[in-house]
Length: 111
Length: 112
Image (cartoon, rainbow over all chains, first blue to last red; front, side, top):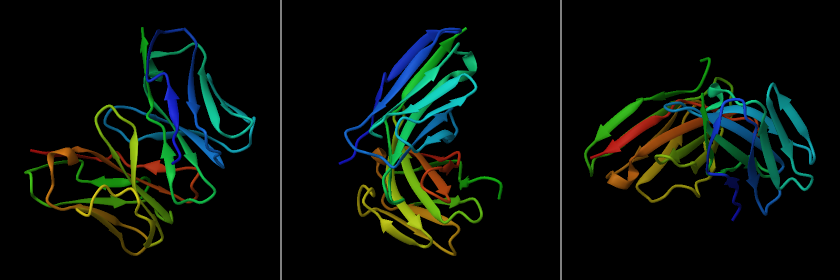
């Protein structure tokens, strides 16, 4: 069974600080996505990484796919209150039949 | 439509009743997914459609749950004889490829 573990589960930091969220698995994924979900809404896709070792930047967010395509990290620089939300990673296998979601990291940025 | 639309947005039902949840995917998206999200938790995969067929039904938690899709468009998730443990947000997503799913806002189901 493929599993994606996210850590930490909860994170509360002060505005302006940096943070890193991790997504780990023992399985290899053909691609991995990061989503952010706000209360009462569905998850919104932030980025897709495909190649082992790939790094993508989205403003203050930096996403990295592990060399072996089993893990990923999300680093936020100078966090803002608008970054608050549930961050989910999701892995796709070679077929489109099932996307495995991690349990999420609930991020709270204090003003 | 511009995005994935789900209806109703909220549903309150009594234990033992049947409910139908609807998902209108983005036009042209061939893949459609249903997930369940319990309060404060991540997403639990339920079922996946490619076109009108469902090659993967492995996530359906019991035979009370069923889903269909017609015209490679609208999908309906039906829960029969609802139980209190069915209370959750049911999310639908559509995609052209597995790498990028677009989600609706979900249906919040409360079983009393």
